[in-house]
Image (cartoon, rainbow, N blue to C red; front, side, top):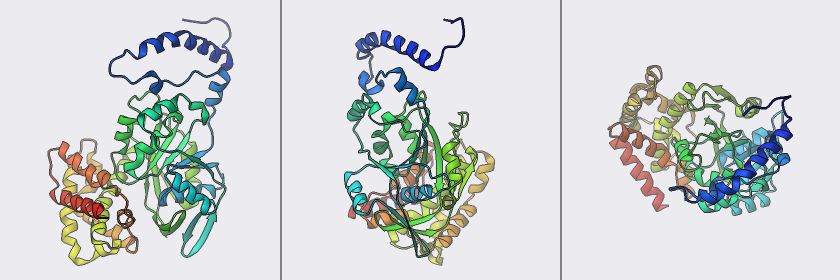
Length: 399
């Protein structure tokens, strides 16, 4: 179909699109339920909206949403609100009890560095309770109740990611950018499978790797125990997509975050380096109930050598790894990497040990569990890492 004459204005084109959708929608709605293997139409289709509402949806918001208000999420929110641009920040609470704690805390985040307290406020807040798949379908039919989310930082524990994102699934579009700032690997595969199975309409993903040392003893009070960096970049899958610059630009301008923008290959290497550290430091400290520095003692060297040798064998066999990246993951290098990190963070308590002490589930399934899954795909065994995982799970069950 072609149109002659001058190009129609946006509102005019939207009205034309609206008339077309209204014409075909009744027939589509009537027959959709009969397609085998699909959900009901209310689970997949957005509601019909007026042209002015559609046009408003296309306007990008500057609000940055933070989903997950543990140590990392609070640190990022606190840092962003103190940046030169001072972007609007909305905190998404996925538990009513946590929202109540927020109100009791004075609605501020306190980050303490070298004994100096820095208290910041001025955040917007929303309650985004995780939904079942059926409830999320109903939420799609009321997508105009809240504005779309264009910029989202996900800092929830890996095992809670899908449930937490499901609560705002209807507000995420192809124009949205999601920065995953978490431990472990394999989360994006799960998000795609359960929330965004089609690339059409899928948000733009970015990966973040945090090396700041952060811990806390109460909600919204964070101790910045070790200065580090946050490396961010696109995934290799999203490399060809237009990279949005607003969220990365804001983070690069936020001094406390110490952000670096990386290429997909650099991010892949950094992801695995972080995973290697987590594969060794987190489970061992969780079992031994000790700070990271304990792993630098002589009696731990052989254990670290055995674990890193198994890990290296898996990485060397990964098809997505180039030869140049694999060269960074030889057994001796990995043992040195783990020892260096344990030395630099000697006084820190690993996130896995913090979870064990707090009686929470750990991220072991997305750390050692991911390694074991990749090893299985390659026909390899990681017996010592598997034993370590079982011991963590046992301690987790015992509380």
